[in-house]
Amino acid sequence: MAIINHIKTVLLLGILTAILLFLGSLFGPTGLTVAIVFVAAMNLITYFFSHKLVLLIYRAKEAKKSDYPKLHKTIEELAKKANIPKPKIYTIPTNNLNAFASGNSPRNAVVACTDGILKALNHNELEGVLAHEISHVKNRDILITTIAATIGGIISYLAMMARFGAIFGGMGNNRDSGNIFALLALSILAPIAALVVQLAISRTREYQADASGAKLIKDGEPLASALIKLHEHNKHNPIRFGSPATSSLFIINPFSSSFLVNILSTHPDYKKRVERLKGMKF
Image (cartoon, rainbow, N blue to C red; front, side, top):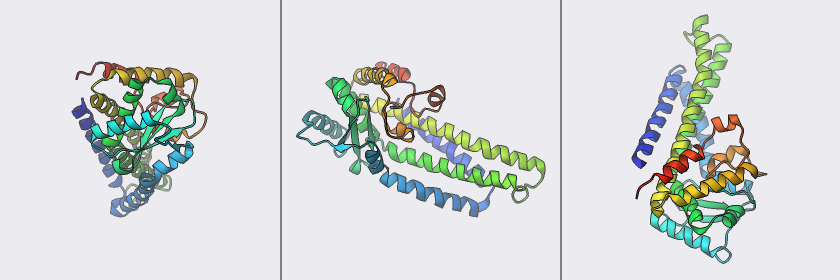
């Protein structure tokens, strides 16, 4: 399963790159270079500082070892098994049941748990959730999603330039009406295709974190049980603050869902995740 998920990620990143190169070929080296520099700079800032920003957004406080000895012990043991440094640990003041990991490398990673999840889950379930988050750190998923976001951002930027080009008479040799309409259609479809691929990458990394976390504790049942509890609770008790733009960080979407949100979700359906976890063999 792990190998399949890694292959899927590589293939999806390849598709994103192919879309980028095709769209970039319409602009020549200069237009593509401008787009790459602009979007890469923006995403580099996000990559290095996003974990600090998200902790601020959710009013997270560092969890002292004296106040949360069991939490520290569990994360320390999991980090040791995963052969990574122990992440900094934070708590979020909400009864919503959730957790997330962030940070641009294992050396400066953070794991945050809501007050609600610490109260609602038993030890085994919480260990399953934390193993999932430790696996995100181990697998460098923040880096992978940042690469995908950077490529997707460049595609969106180029598509915007293409739309302007089509509206104001085409680009270069593409000045007849047929080429202008084709360019306009491409400028609309390319970002949609990129978004679909980005969502697929995010879902693949969630499946991979589930599998890696279960492998870490040699049991898929605790996380499966936790996901069911988290889904049922969060369905009626969504988080009341923060930003939906950060929902991909959490182990399960903490905000209220609609049909459109579910279609564009960065997370796989929880039932499929539970089914895969229960079917794992160790």
